[in-house]
Image 1: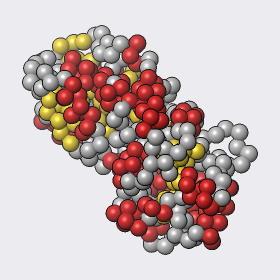
Image 2: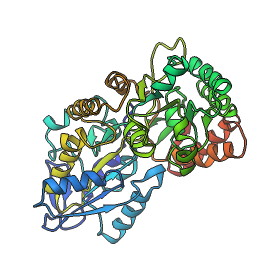
Image 3: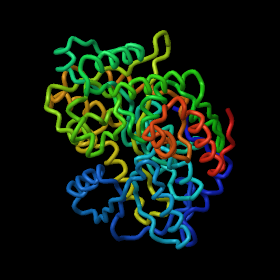
Image 4: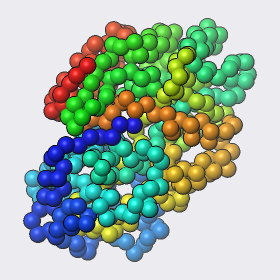
Length: 435
């Protein structure tokens, strides 16, 4: 993965954050706010609420103020908007925040919001435990400003029972995947081999297909080429399957999908957290049916690649008056087997917790066959050509492509509009756009 690159602004920001009255923390690399008592304020989305509540249960002496918000889902920018307000009023900042987005440091460092973690707040022995590259989205000029919660590498989920019943082979290539979709359309109409109805569709398919729509090349530079051969062939595949109705255009989290299509899923490319959140949680798919296979690859491609959908990050506020409590919580919530290994729905970014998580998944006997192998392999195959810019690809795709598909247009025909929309969003955030 590409790191979120910073610029020369970093030194000025981190030495100024905290406002007047703080104490210079040369070792920590920023000006600390006066440390006081009072509750630790933690912002989480609804999924991570269980993490904060479990920490409170295990640490009853810690006073906590747990606040739920949207987690910046689909690039809502709620956190950035609120931090901008808090910066103006000089109060209100939460101590610790979870975000479902991996690009928060692209603005949070400039805003002086997020504290550097590898300058003394967290020991290197702890930080060394993250999977290789997992914290790249959190790193600016060698300084770590957040911690990755989980890896959201994409794999191919499939109904093992139906595959056996119908005599189908799990496809290893995108060519075979499309061919199977066409066969399903003819032999078992109504059943699905995928979904293209969510804002994160490009992160599943276009990212895995090495579509160069989002390559961050500098602190404020991006290259965009959505009409390349890699983009066009994946868009053509999606269009083919949308046309024969084996590729849903409904969100997998919509009531429509849950009611009418959840029990019709033969295959579903998607992130590691689909198992717990979607199949077990939302769809209530019975145990023993769902298996995992590697993400399909284009025939002849020597470098396997997968996409990434979310993963989420934890940020510690540079304005926190409770840094010790904040770092204790941050460490526990990202590394503890009690949460990450046993409760978290997604594949933990912390290696030891991932091992415990996989063992826990196996012991549940929910899945059909081995899931550890495909997930471990995919964790090292996330294509590095898709970056983490300040603008949200999910929001852009939803507004540009999803809307067009709903109106009856093909994804291929919408690729130029997608290109223009990304460029416009990027320029509005101060990026230099190249191709």
